Image 1 (tube, rainbow, N blue to C red):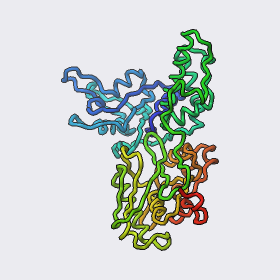
Image 2 (tube, rainbow, N blue to C red):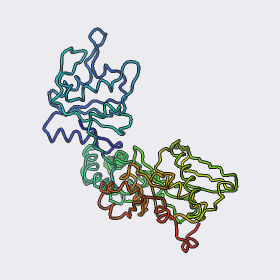
Image 3 (spheres, helix red, strand yellow):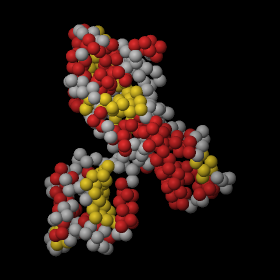
Image 4 (cartoon, one colour):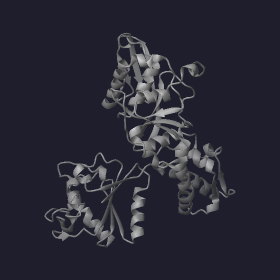
Amino acid sequence: ILCLVGPPGVGKTSLARSVAHAMGRRFTRISLGGVRDEAEIRGHRRTYVGALPGRIVQGMRRAGSINPVFLLDEVDKIATDGHGDPAAALLEVLDPEENRHFSDHYLEIDLDLSEVLFITTANSTQPIPRALFDRMEPIVLGGYAEEEKLEIARRHLLPRLLEKMGLEASALQVSDGAIRTIIRRYTHEAGVRSLERSLATLCRKAARAKLEGRRLPLTVTGRSLAAHLGPPGRPPGSREGAHQVGVATAVYWTELGGDTMPIEVTVMAGRGRLLLTGQLGEVMRESAQAGVSYIRAHTQALGVPPDFHRRTDIHVHVPDGATPKEGPSAGITMATAMVSALSQRPVRSDVAMTGEITLRGRVLPVGGIREKVLAVHRAGIRTMVLPAANRGDERDLPPAVRRAMSLHFVHTMDEVLEIALVAADDAGARLV
């Protein structure tokens, strides 16, 4: 049982259709998002008014085949209420040893599902019950790099949209620079759905121009893009301009892909309090506390006043305060920003980092490396610090990105600080 795991818009459903086409099998699909009733899977008993077969039987009937490719979409969105657990009903469906005799309550006869190729999709594996996920073989589909999105738009999205709107291929000419601008400043996603919507807007502009009798083709360049799509919603890049004291660049990953964010630390006279703001979750707060303990244990080596914990308050703030943030991967970034603020050594603005910190200063592995490196590359940063245990994950990166990036795999915080902090003789010239 294959489980395609990845953010929205990366082509999980399209890949399942392609598998069916390549195998010469019928294709059928059901969506499990929001399914709460076990009868949706196993069917209703005939004693109920309006009884129907379950979705599995209905999908098989639509396919008209005993061995179709059967897509169970959004398997991580199954809900549970008092009508039973649909995920428990799927245990029999997705078990090759048990689904030879699948029982639907409406049919009341055994149905052989052993010849069916089941493919499931999910945005995340965490919500999937462990017993159900144990029956699946996960295949992770990461987000697309900029070059990949450009080729998808050029080869697939634009021709399909023009054909759908009844336009000739020559009716609209979109430059590569315009597509790159859409990717960087009009969309924020791992997939290509928002990109497709923006290109569809340009196609509608061309269709309107044709109906009004204006001259074609409609040519769209990077400079004229704002006239067609309006002002961009995202800044051109999130890299800090100059090296700053107490500001380090972290990288995070969500189902929508990766992005960078600055972590700001300021110190002030006080009684050793640690203030954490920006809607930080419990795990992220504990990472900040672990960073403070590490600094207190190594004050002399870090050039930090030994009594800072008695006379200094530390305020850690993660901007975009309206968005909740959680996870341990910003541990080394918060620790680096705190060391910078306490020692007055600036952090390099051209370095981003991710990794969990321990009390001994070890750097532990984190997830989402591909998405995080792509986000750093989009932001114009070319140096990134990663946990040594994540070495090998860079093989998933596009070759062009891998060649452009300088990736440093570290074991301890000492290595992180050596890379991230500006050398003492250079700090004065670059300090803000």
